[in-house]
Image (tube, each protein chain N blue to C red):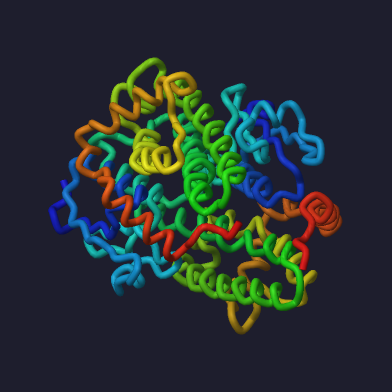
Length: 231
Length: 231
């Protein structure tokens, strides 16, 4: 097991991408030093660790070169510690299918929340809502396929897609509240409604999910630095 | 080795993402059936194989569920046939670093070529050129790091990043010619200039790279269906 100081994680508490790395570190019982970053005034450590994107999360393992981007970090952690709570399945086809849906969630689904924030006017927002709802149905179908009647995308316990989608629960609830609609609901996505409750109370997750105040502060920062588009 | 009919690849000859899968199939001496897709009128096979994105490439292995997205397909091929021409290195940190640069190339660098096409006016295009040139310098530095004084990103022979960046050579030359500038040049990126020549004549690559006529036709289709933005 890694010693306490062997793994450092540069992050910010409001970032779902950071939270997801924390989920995996917890699942694998890897101790780590957490370094909170101020995104409004980025540290020298972040700028030199991720000079290309200048973004969190960054993971530094025993003074080796830093590793950037959450999905890449997760695969790294799964490769250096495959014996404790394997995240990706071992079958190549299932791995491919997991990666496909992770990309869908990161590149198509979650960006719609930000699109909702910056899109002005009811008509524009309603069009985004429609796309989020279409996406939620695809995710429900994916859940049915992956879970095979069990509790998580990963089956009996949390797997790759539980981590990937699970880190967005706090922002999902925040987006629902802000926009008066449900991303996941009992009629359209009954299994994901149950899944959200289970993930939310999972031992490895519950101390990582940011509270409402953290989200509100981050949202205010976004509104200031990347304001909604003009009507 | 896979039998001829065991692997099917749905693609279009002008797509660098399809070409990159073909590189890997050739490197691994995997025979496959190639099915050319007409993107202007998508086939039932494509729509049912990739209902989420409706894009090529799609790989179908022995009637199993289809695999979509080029980088995911490449990792799959590397996992089912690791003994012939390993594409990703085995060290977890090097794997992470390779994946990082692959994402940079796909999500930051190559999209600038399309951005160049749709951006109107000299001033707008010059700003994109500047970003492409900045990217080329980052890629030269990455090449120096990965190649360790040898011939390819992968060292003595073609590796993951050779495949990932190599598939864009034809579109690079096309973009250079169309916009009267050099993406890679002797002064700024001397090693990549040499690397381009080597990739271009590599046995696994040379029959896959699309000819100029193919690119011109594809470009005309793009101009028609996704015309440049108005000034």
